View 1: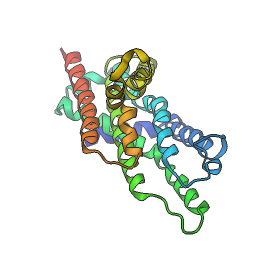
View 2 (view 1 turned 30 degrees about the horizontal axis):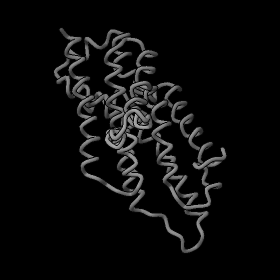
View 3 (view 1 turned 90 degrees about the vertical axis):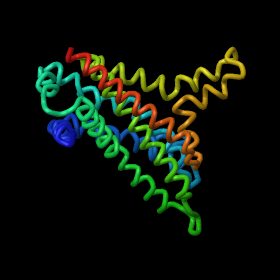
Length: 243
């Protein structure tokens, strides 16, 4: 598992595209946090509130993280190394776990510039003002779980196709549905009293509990369920490829 993790990490940083992805993500996030006018801009908000930053990051990750995961198995299929990988003395579950952990690790690197945001917020605060560390820890927990879901989902989509473009577009589409699909559906009047239930089902609705400063263990279990589900689907897809 760890050999696959290391191989994928080295492969990602083995080309300029890997560094370009990380730099591009940091630049786009920085534009929202420091330059573009809006609720996410620290200089225009007037409050030492990191909530807008945490609510923006999942949307950026929806479009960027599939660019990392699209190569997980699509590249293996294209180059013919998938057959070699699947015949090695390692279980399919460990292969999938190694791939997901590699994408997850890169996702962690992507959000590291968030530390600069907090440092800037700390420097600009009025003396005596404090950042709600409990809220930050809760939101960070939710964000890490979301990265886990996005990673597992992207790896699963990659296991379904030889096309990296197809894996990317499919990953973005499914992540959008998972994150906002139910939440958006709840805004229609015809759903009636089911709107509350739909919002609680959507990943955006669940994540809102974390950004509100609450670590709800039912929500944690719900997010872990999605990680395990897409991990299982990846294993099933690979086992089907071997037949």
